[in-house]
Image 1 (cartoon, rainbow, N blue to C red):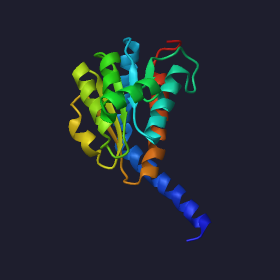
Image 2 (image 1 turned 180 degrees about the vertical axis):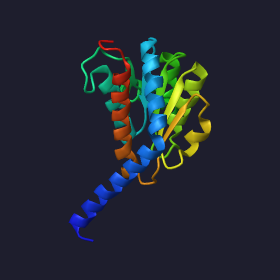
Image 3 (image 1 turned 30 degrees about the vertical axis):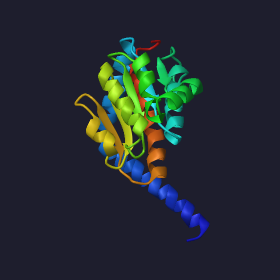
Length: 196
């Protein structure tokens, strides 16, 4: 396969996965928008975490809420648990890498908040630990995963929401995660009162 055809196949595969995600996830995605909007309107916060590309996605999401997405509005309370290098390295060194998000969530989170837990495989140990910490604090979880949802799927409670991109390829999952994140940002903005 020549390079142009390889590139074309990436585009075709990405479109296919996004279309399938729309068919399977639209209602759950709308529910996630409503859950996050409700938390923010009631004075809660939205936390986000993930590793590698998912850490970048967590930071991107928080930046869109604290700054703005496409609509001018007040700042929204969002925290990426991936950004404080002193906390990450101290907790990683003293307690282990699996605790880097859960300890922050136990320190900062409270009932009524929401956690956006991002893992392409659904098997990231530190994201799983964060889900446990969220449940301990009465924090609702929106799980952004791929394929069947991995180990995270089995941890989710009735009030949590699973957004599992229906593909096994990391690149396709990550591309679709970014689209889902932008849908969350737009949905939150559309549900908040003007100027809120």
